[in-house]
Structure formats: C-alpha cells, structure tokens
Image (cartoon, rainbow over all chains, first blue to last red; front, side):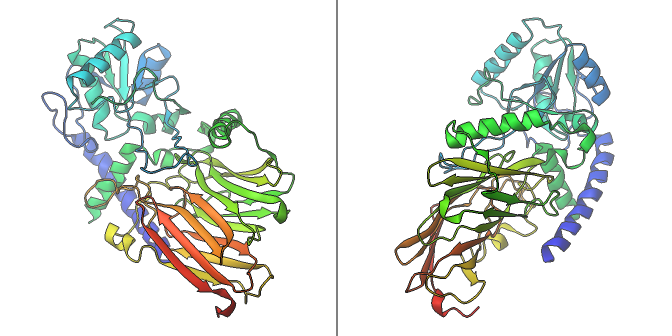
Length: 189
Length: 274
C-alpha cells in the first residue's frame, strides 16, 4: 500500500517534471566551445554550430534518403559477479537500420578513442564526407551532441543532430532491437 | 526535492532504460512474434547451450499478469504437474538484460508443485518457465507481460534505508508442519537487490549492483532447493515453495549476494506457530 502511494507520488512528480523539462528544452544549455566533458545526462543546447538540429519527421526523411544513422547510447552496465548460469544479454531498441556505436559520444576521449571514432565513421560513410549522417541517443543525452560535434570537427559537411533520439522515434514509428556494431568494440576511451 | 526527483527522472529517460514508458502503444509496437521467437532462440542457446525446450503440455504452467501494476514487483506463479519428475526450473524474463530471474534445482526434500516469485520486468516481454525433467528433457510454458521500467524504477527510499536490515530471513508456513507431509512455505528476504540501473535521486549516480545470487534451503542435510538468481528478482524477494519436512524438521536457509556477503537462519519448523 505504502509502495503504491509512493508510486503515485513519483508518477505525479515525474509528469510535472516532464512538462517542466519540455519547457526547459526551449531555453537549452549554452553551446560549449568544443566537446562536452561534463555529466553525460542533463540539459543540452538547442543548437550545434556546423550541424542541423532535426526533429523526428526530418529524421525519418533523412533515413528514407539513405542517411547514415548512428546511435551512440551507452550500453547498460553489466553487474559484477554474474555467473555463467546468468547470461547478460541486454536488448537495445533503436531506429531500424541504425549503427549502434555504444558510448561513441564520450567527450573526453583518448587519442586512441578519437582515432577509432574517425576510422569507423570513414568506413561507414565510405570516405564520403558529404554523406548525410544523423547522430542520436536519448533525450537530454550529451552523447549525440558530442558525436555530431565530433563529425563537424572531422570535416563532415552534412551532420544532423537528432536530440529526440530513440524515444521521439518510438513515439511515432517502430523501433527495433539493434546489436552493438561489431567493428566498434567498446573499450578504448 | 521536486526538482531533484524531476531531474533524476529525466536522467533516467535520457539513459533510455525505461525507453518506451511514454511512447509505446500497441499499434506501433516493434514486437513481432518473429522477433520474440528469435530472442528466445538466442536465450535457449545461451542458457541451455543449444538444447531446446518443447511446449509443456501441462507439465509446467506459468501464470503471470497480462499487464503488471508495478513493473518492479510482478508476481508470477509456476505450477508443476508431475512434481516428482521435475529436477530443475528456470524463470526467464526474455527481454530483461539479465533474463534468468531464477534457476532452481530441487533436492529430495522438495515438493515442487508450485513456486511463486516476484520479479522485475523492464519492457514488454515474453516470460518463460522451463522445467527440466528427470530424464533431462526441457519443457516450457510462456506468457506475455506488458510492463516497463521495472529495472530502473527508483527505489522511493534512500540507499541507506533500502539497505537497512539487509539479510533478514523470514519464513512462514501455510499450515503446521509434520514429517513426511508436504507443506507450502513462504520465504521472505530483506535485500534491495540493486540492479545497477537505479539512479540515486540525490546524487544522480547509479547505485552499484548488489543482488542475491544464491539461496539454499535444506532440511537437516537434505536439500529442498538450490537457487541461483540475478537482478531480475524484485527487491526484498518473496519466494513460495513446497517442502516435505524430515523427521527433525530443522530448516536452514542460506543466502549470499553478489558482494559475497552470506546470511543464514535456522527454523525449527515442526514447532513453528505461524
């Protein structure tokens, strides 16, 4: 009973918070001059210099035109001490056809991480810096902002940042389970 | 406080562990029978090393709510028809990141007719109860459960409060225990079963995973059951099971968690009054 009351409270607060969050989103955090190295989850800017900020309809349009979609959401952390009797097999829902570069939006990456990101993107775009690339993760996720920023810094000409991410997509279209990109092993940061 | 909660909640959304909470409607659901079947095949490979479970034809029956009221506390009942033929039981929440909620191996003092669990459900998912028969064959029953956010649901209390009384073991019998007569028992464990996906609402950091990974119940030297469990079990797990008391009726419950802490309690079940 107590738990139920608590749940109800949390729900009301969450609903209020959601509206509050929506109101906040119009203001947005200021754009950092380079990559963002603070906490990865929080208020993001409304803009990204050198890239185009898009909504779900535009994301769908770009997908239909064959743009490269990169999802940089982080994989949930594997709990320590799990025995082989308890396999760890998280399902990641994303935009169908997206390439999941888990944690690819890490801001303070080592030189090895930066090279890995640049090399994987060069592969995925076939070396074509004019190919449209859409970066996304989840709402209020700096990862996709960083990934898009990094693409701009790498000289990509058609970079799109989709801040609504998987949730905005799921609101309108079907998401699909997506496996981690094999050539992008999460490791070097 | 409101703002902090708000921020925490939005943070959770941002991480997407509770992705479809706002969004998903039946019409645009990504779920297709084919996708569910392929997930199950992947799980069979990982859990049973390629062996497949056949539909149970009534040997094992899984009862689960079609739509869960509280995704962090979903009751499930597994009924086993030919109790003497069942060696082991798995409860598997297909789409949870750690799908095996419990793997139970019954011992000679078990009466494996019915087991009740409380689990977390992260997303709309199939749930499977798989029984292993004495001849090694696997039989299963499945149910579809609509719930989401069970893994990231905030605790509604502080970490310190959640940890208070950790390891407390309580046992209740459905009736007076007599040697050789099957009786139902309810085991109640106090443990937050942190799954690593719950955000501390004040610090906005994730509470590290810490969960019960092993429970052994025996009567004297005779095993009732051994259970391996994972983060899919609800906080403060409650487990109902059947046992056949031995002549001395001295039940020992041993519990250990992923941080290698052990607890033990003995119950003089022939003399228990409620």
